[in-house]
Length: 156
Image 1 (cartoon, rainbow, N blue to C red):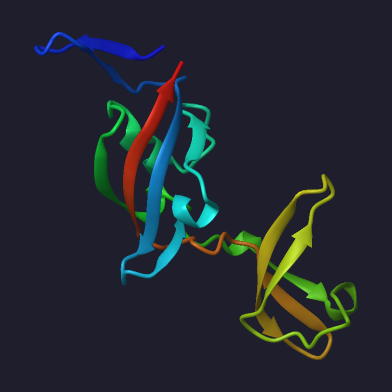
Image 2 (cartoon, rainbow, N blue to C red):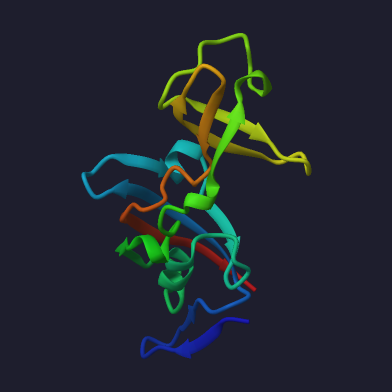
């Protein structure tokens, strides 16, 4: 349930708290200004339940206490976003287990299908005659992210 505050103008202000479902318009950029994602690109606001860990930690924490129509810009360190590079997510795979219909090159992105049916991106880190080194870390791991956010809607 949202916190409801009485404002001097005689209306009520609803501030976001955990378990609220919200819609957020956003633009995500790298430190150099490169836009990597936005709600405009998807044609609709991002919807999520605050506190359900459906978005990165720093983004979720940034919306707490905001109200419908509020806007702000936040900068998230890697620890508040996708974390630091994890060497355990770098795997060597025999070349024969990968698609044979295209030439595999360093830097190329592949979609890997998990046993549960989910797909995750994998970046080719190295290619040799017999094996390919895949980096399964999120593409934004280790990056500082800058978001412009605007609260479009709040519901309990």
